Length: 73
Image (cartoon, rainbow, N blue to C red):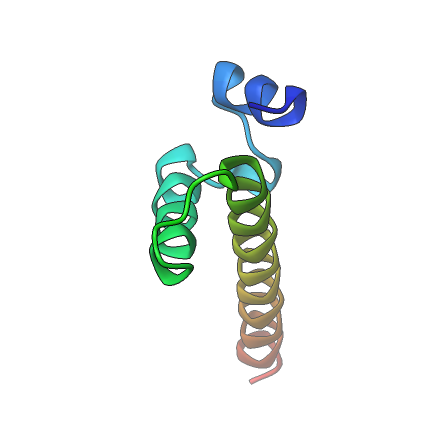
């Protein structure tokens, strides 16, 4: 396990407050999509984390835009 992943798992803290179980589930999905071939756990974790961070960022941007539209009404 990489030092980056070990720190996150140990602390339970993730950028943008993404729950660890969500990252774990997405990393598992990536593993399954690759045909359940081992040896990529750290990469799968980091990919899952990056994907979820991007999704959360986009969701927050959409919520902000929606709130702006509502406030202007």
